[in-house]
Length: 120
Image 1 (cartoon, rainbow, N blue to C red):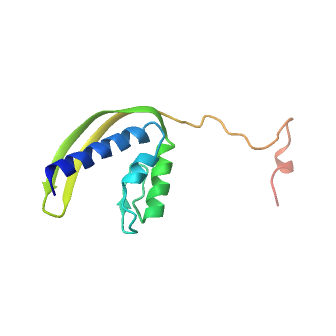
Image 2 (image 1 turned 90 degrees about the vertical axis):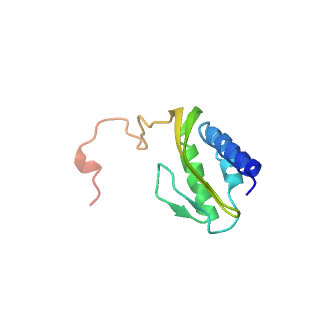
Image 3 (image 1 turned 135 degrees about the horizontal axis):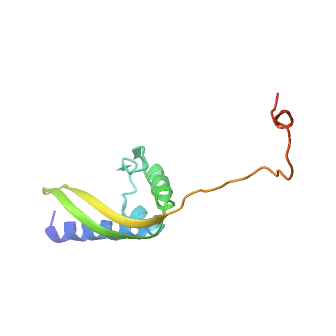
């Protein structure tokens, strides 16, 4: 694999991470092969296989972030052959996350005894 191609792929991956941290999964989704043997492991787990599951997982991951940025990417290892390249990196980032602080779906408007809301 030519070095310039690998450098470009790594830069695109870093840009895609930046987009995820702003809540946009589409940049990362565009980098994945359309083949159904693609895989993804991310901090929200579990590992997934297949283009559709990868896209869903990336969307789910992006939904946790907003207003983020990549602070540092530390290269741990890089292996390159004629037909395959593998990199191992540690990503450090800053982002705001959406946190649920209250959810209410029952139209309670006055106190009720427990017996009135427990189904039998």
